[in-house]
Image 1 (tube, rainbow, N blue to C red):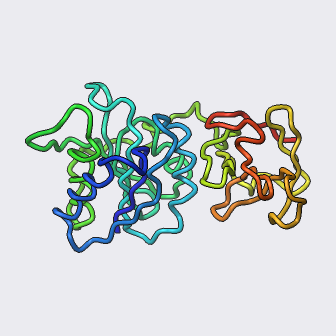
Image 2 (image 1 turned 135 degrees about the vertical axis):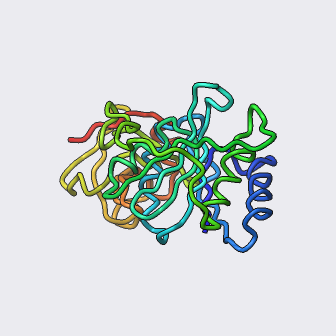
Length: 242
């Protein structure tokens, strides 16, 4: 399958245009919409989010991942990555940094193939979608192998104590895996100290808490309330752990 991860938004033509290319070039390959509202123009936050979702997909899944504020810049590289048996196609701007650091097996290619026509502002459609289709069809990566560990940004932390995503309910995911904490830990955000609960029903209505979400991330929520609005949370809001 091909899994879409991008910051294009759920309105507008962009995801549909990209899907049209994929269906035209790989019509028998299923397409899964994972995120169309990844952290906008923020590959760093998106990297921690993407890494937490990849393991649930089968081997040989192709992730077409585009959070690309540097699109069209002649210095921005493009990449094909194979990590732990799954493929990733997208900009080389740190988006694959976290999953690559955590991978047991890793290969990296600089994407050198270019279509005959390419826009300056929509490489998701013109460059990355055709390459994702090629990989999904079983073709060899159209790129040059590079030492994969050299492309990983060493200055980024293994775990990110910041909000990286706010969902439809107003719950705030952190770039921090819950396995790194215990139920005794508390998190501090905007001068508010928040304790752990296993489920929403374990706290009173209107009470904030943190919990381990279904993909293993620390998530801040408020029972039957919009946590982001109530606590003043946004992408990039820092969180401390006690």
